[in-house]
Length: 224
Image 1: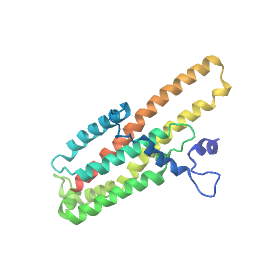
Image 2: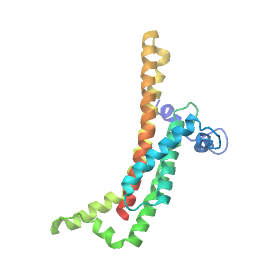
Image 3: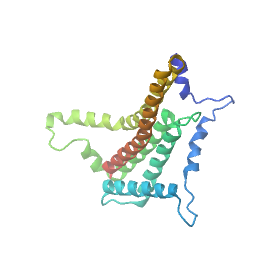
Image 4: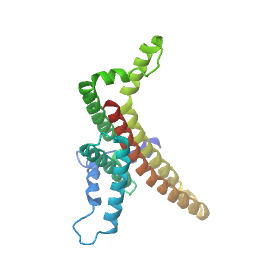
């Protein structure tokens, strides 16, 4: 039962190599065509989302405004959000539910932040290991605790995203698997609960992409 349940996340196909990861390229279909004389509703919604995200990220960056940083984090947000959204469709592989993808992105960002911080702002990175007002006896322990918490950051970023995507899909799979055994009244209740879960998963798709982007930017700010 458990093998069949988790087989929905199995990145394998009938060919000699896995092609399910190609689903990540499907997000290109969601890029609006901006060459129309009259903007479409989809392009207007897309631009509203971009403007909202820019305003949120500007608050975090504050004086250290860098358009290149904005472009990077906006790209990560849109990529993760659209992949989460595509995973709700039937027969489309959810790439963000696998640590192969999420851990690759979180490690890439974390390593780049650490290299930049220790090379450019070495003193600041050493100071950050000991919070202000720490007693002298606790300083070695605080350095150890801060170092461990810093090292596990990419893992927590990756696990948070993948675990939330797996949890929602598993819950919908468990509920829908009981459909053939239910009578008509319980079947209507199951359909309503599935509809509520889909709405919840839509919000989770946006929230998890937002959390991943904001936490990554906060980690970058600490090194600058």
